[in-house]
Structures are given as structure tokens and as C-alpha cells.
Length: 290
Image 1 (spheres, one colour):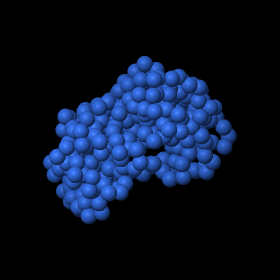
Image 2 (cartoon, rainbow, N blue to C red):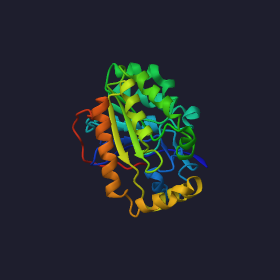
Image 3 (spheres, one colour):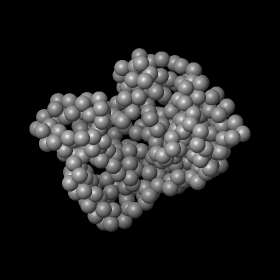
């Protein structure tokens, strides 16, 4: 189900930076379909069932953004576009909401952080190049595995992993920074020595500014659904995987082993970058999604 809506609010504040305090999501629900997505639970509050198929399209997002950025109390804080759902999911080909959003951002010279798993962002390269000349534009993507057969199971609607890295490289020198999230690291699946090594080797080769990592976190229904996926597609791993996730987080000893491996790879490839948000005054008033 695809439903067009008129949003009442489009900027959302949260006290902890992820990596910014303000989010803008043109869509609710996401056709990228990452099976580990933490945001799946949020659809329950909207009375919707399927996060990957029941999509709300905020057709008036640019108009609402214009009004919210025009408020005298707005602090020109950095905005993350695509914090809960991917801004360049497949529906963006039809609705083309992003060029209109960027036009508003450009008028207000507001810094942005853009995160996507889709190379559709390259459609707007020239727009983002112009935007970067008047304000801070940070580009990020996240990856899990270079094994495309596994990627198609875990992230069926995302662009191929290597293409995402190539996309970041294209924005190198245009954006203020490029950030690669090796996240989530999926135990027993994307944590092989070969996959770990490839992430840091290519991050160095492509000149990516920052690499951030995190291990898979599972809670509630997402955990149930992901365990079912493991049982279906990776039955030989199911027992060990379930033991690692007795709780929402991976076993502490496992997490420590991964931490040690990543530290060694950072040292080997001299990849130490840590993302630094644009410094602006943070307003502590929370706006609703609608």
C-alpha cells in the first residue's frame, strides 16, 4: 500500500545525535527492505503492518520544510535526511521529492547530512554540488557484506555494496565529508576476516573520510523476524546465532573479539576518521513527525 499524505510537521528533534539532533524523512516505511532495520516497530504506531510495503509519502514535505526553516527560532542546525527511512528508496524515482527539498535547504543555507543505500543519489549530483558551495553537505552510506548473494537476502532493495562505495568516492571533494558505516556487522555472516579486511582496504583505497562500525542489535519483533530469516536462509548457523543473541545484543565476548579485529584493521590501513557534526546551537523543543 502506497499512500500520499499531507504532513503537519517534517522535522523531528531527538536529544542524542544520530549523528545530528534533527531528522527529516520524506517517506515513512522503506522499500529498501533491510531485514535488520530498527525502525520496523514504528509502523505499529501508525496502524500499519508492513514497514517494507506500506509506505507513506509526504507529498508536501518541501512546503512544510520551508515553513519550519523560516521560523525565527530555527537555529540552522544540521539536518539528517533519511534517519528512519532511506530518502532514495525506489519511490523517489516517481515522486522526486529530494530536488524540491534541496531547493529549500539551499535557500536557507542549512547544513545537511545525507545517508542512503541507493546510488539514485547520483541523479542529484549537480544539485548537491551546487548546495555544497553554500553550506555543509555530508554524504554517508552503510554496508554489511560484499557477498552479493547474501546482500540480496539481507538488503534486497539496496544498491550493490561496491557501487555504494564508488558513490561515496564520487562525492569525495564535493561534500564536506564522506562516511562509511560498516553496520550492522552481522555475526557469523558478515564478520568473516575477508569481509572485515575488504571494508577497511576499500575505505582506504577510495579515500573515505570516516568509518563507523556497530554490531547487529535486535529487539522485539525485529529479533523474531531476523531469527526466522536466519533459520530459513542460513539453517546451519541458526543454533549458534540464537545463542549469541540470548538478549538484544550480541554476546559480550563476541563483541570484544570484533572490537580487537577492527582496531587492528584501523591501524593497518590507517583509517581513524571519526565523524564530526556541524556545530550549531541545538534547540531542545521536539517536533512531531506529522
